[in-house]
Length: 112
Image (cartoon, rainbow, N blue to C red):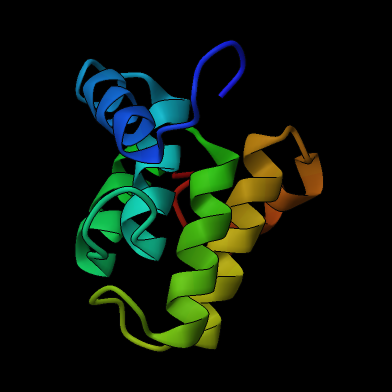
């Protein structure tokens, strides 16, 4: 909305286009729009799909969103404290936390 009238639907359109072109941050933000129904129809399953795609490319923010979805059992994810914890640790590892990397490896989890 800087310099123009605020239009969330138009913003979501550009987040989606950018996400489809591979922008990792846009994948996560578009997922958040879908999750909350901001400027688009609420679709938590589709949100999780975008979070997973962004997480697979290394987005710690998307990993944190997946942790929240797993904790609550939202968007087709099974409610699981364990899976939520693993996604939280992956987010820490993606930010360069060596202890988080070591924990994932030691416990047989992938980094993404």
